[in-house]
Image 1 (cartoon, rainbow, N blue to C red):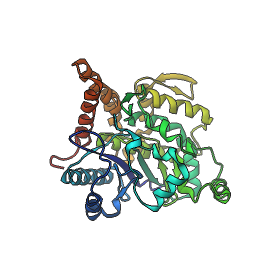
Image 2: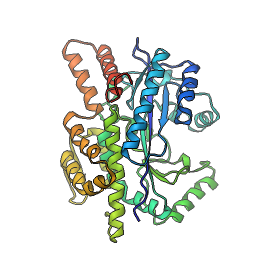
Image 3: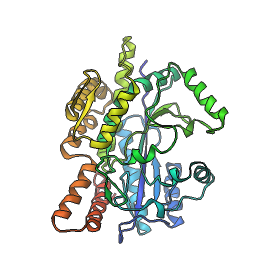
Length: 379
């Protein structure tokens, strides 16, 4: 059977001071209280006070996800404005310093700080996670094994973190380089069964290195809270339409693999080192260069690989009602990701004579504007 493939999307945002364009290190406590009053459990604080996270309810399809993401972004932006702040959807701030941020006072975050030390304190990064409903546990593991192949492609389409601490890092995704200093990150291993996976979890818990499976921070994992397969590799997208494109791609890929499975077919399982190489290329170049076609064993232009994936998942995207969102990948390729746009704005400001700090402010202004660009006027 094809699984339900219901969707849930989580996004993390940064809170910006409209005067300095730096991060707000200590937002008013009334801000989160106000957000909670309007959104309930759909909004939560993050490890750092300058961050806020939203999560949709279970969405039947991409149309439902669009409705909820639009509403959630709108409420966060409007509430932030009420408290003299702006909202930025990007995986790093162009010039903010991680050492100046304050972590949220809560037992979970206090424990993380105690356990992880400087690794967690550096987490001035934001991501986007997409849950897809897969009821059967064995199918969840099988699809995780196969879907690993596509994680670098999804990452490349999402990149929004070219700057770190005021520096152009010559990376389209700086976020993962920071995140990978944490334990239990990266492309997951291959597991032959759900029981093999749970035995591994139990051994780590018994060893005392983690409390539960929520402390697995892989690029993809079976959720320990929901019957879902959670994709976690992507940067948070500045543009709402880009986020919906990636969610639709992910959902369609899972349906395609489920459909193949019905015919006793499957996607070839490649060595993790090969997938990790493409992951690195996605971090370094985003959509602008090549990636390894693991079947051919040679690098191909990223745009060509995306066209091939679109062709492969067209039947599934059509059945799921998300073909328009999948086709939006061509717009991302033509226009560039948020990382590309940030670098363009920075270069244009420099060309007009701006010094680096002024050019980075221009990048922040663009990010704030484009975070709200796909929302209804007046949010």
